[in-house]
Picture: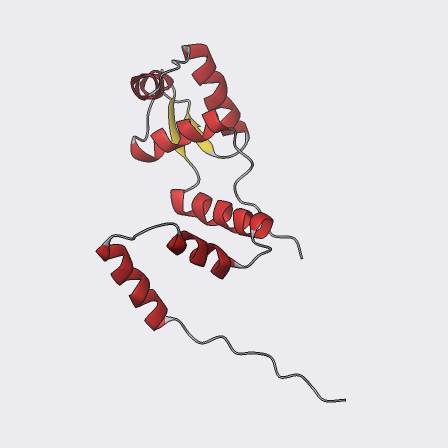
Length: 138
């Protein structure tokens, strides 16, 4: 059964603008441009940002308040929904759907701060055991 993808594929610039709007919403194209250019070594033009924001509206990722001038943009999808979907896609592609393999790989990458270790321990303690399906005997 195919999974429903609530969030369409986003290019790197589209995602960068969405991240700005998660923090600063609603915002005009000019405000998004200012925020993006303040953080980027490769500034964008106003027309580029407006095109990208319009594309995100067309994809259903943003809403535009056209009742005011300039338009104000705000996200229609939350950060957690995008993160959950992208992690699931990553796990499906690189770990054959086995999230536990990704978790082990991340822990192996290096020392974890004590607060992260404590949080992981809590999550593991609260984890419900996985029941293996009984094989029926012929």
